[in-house]
Amino acid sequence: MSAINSEPAAYPHLFEIKNGAIGLPMLRLLGNNPATIANQLREKIRQAPDFFRGAPMVIDLHELSALDEEVDFSALVSAMRDCGLVPVGICGGTDRHLHAAQTAGLSLLADVKHESSHQPVQAVDDKPKQPAVIGKVIEHPVRSGQRIYAPGGDLVVLSQVSAGAEIMADGNIHVYGTLRGRALAGVQGNLDSRIFCLDLQAELIAIGGHYKVSENIEDSVRGLPVHIYLIDNSLKIEKI
Amino acid sequence: MSRIIVVTSGKGGVGKTTTSAAVSMGLALKGHRTAVIDFDVGLRNLDLIMGCERRVVYDFVNVINGEASLNQALIKDKRCDKLFVLPASQTRDKDALSIEGVGKVLNELSKEFDYIVCDSPAGIERGATLAMYFADDAIVVTNPEVSSVRDSDRMLGILASKSRRAEQGDEPIKEYLLLTRYSPQRVKLGEMLSLEDVQEILSLHLLGVIPESKAVLNASNAGTPVILDEKSDAGQAYSDVVRRYLGEGVPHRFIDEEKKGLFGRLFGG
Image 1 (cartoon, rainbow over the protein chains, first blue to last red):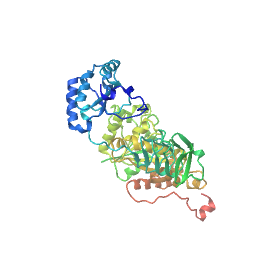
Image 2: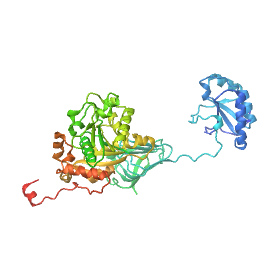
Image 3: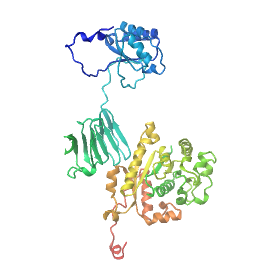
Image 4: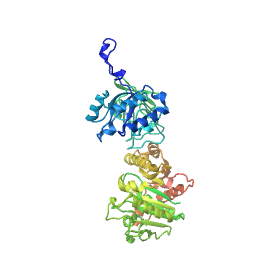
């Protein structure tokens, strides 16, 4: 039993239980041979011992669940501890895995959304991560029938957006040309996102699901450089 | 190195085939070996406009299926020995075209010809997308009215994203605007979009403006590409287009209403 799993009820008034989200590194198993895993793990940790020292880690069994292969959790847990890791639980896996993991003192973590990386353990990179993607820059006209989405960031269009085109972003939208098509900012619900354009002739504008169609856009701002933002759940279009 | 030109528009009836016939004839008259291919399988027209409909033996689909050689299917123009026509099949539909088949034919043609003009069918389905897939240059034929402009815009989007050049990350297809059936008088009356309106919406390099002209219909009926009618305004406009395409600096004409002289005013237009 690790310190993390020691009985919490001993200190009833010294904490509160809250919902939280903490990102934990995952050890995604691609095979079940305990000796090989232990060897490869040691080799990996040796490359960056400080980085992994005392790091809590989740054992990801998604890749093994289809095969329902047996996993020797007690061997795995001790191999991880030997390397200075703190195995906290498992995710994915079959009922059999779950049972074996609980016997070995591991908890079952709620199924987490999978990162798309399918690289084997050896490929884990200990270099600092690239800064997060900030969005998309489009340098050519966005033509009728084209759809462009900038997930997780802003969309910048350095040209025009034609009628019948659709541009979307999780963040802001900038159009350094005429906006004739549809522009939807904050499509994942970010109500603070804005739309900027040099010439507003849009068919539809929307921020976080609050929209206006062309018919409801006042003539006083049509054809002008504007920015559009949400205030009290209604779209405000202002000349810039 | 041959150059593949697609004549396209999205919308039907705007003058793609007229343009294909005129431009290919114009290039051939300038001494370039030119082939013009009808991609409108099932609704073939190019042979009529080119006046070779009575000499069609084999067609594009026959060549793709290996039922005839390219040389058997190519029809040499009687007026210009540098120009060859590859007619479409009238008895098949556009599913008879495959990307591999079209690629093979174009590849073979490019060994012999300087320019290959692909006359696209209307629409954005198989025939049209295959006609533009291998293109180096695109002439986007547009009439001065909103639906034609919108369809051209759509076609430009497809050119930018679904061509071979786009898929392989090469230099994008060169896009040219050709405004056809333009009538400055009707623009003045507000019945048509002006050149400026169209340019503002499409923001595209203007290759030329072809005036609305009786000569086009007459030429089609006679099976003569209108560019051969050197006296007509449309014929001259197409000659300018070909010269501009080949890199000559030719000023644009037929954009403004012609000033009528005293005679014109007295006797009408």
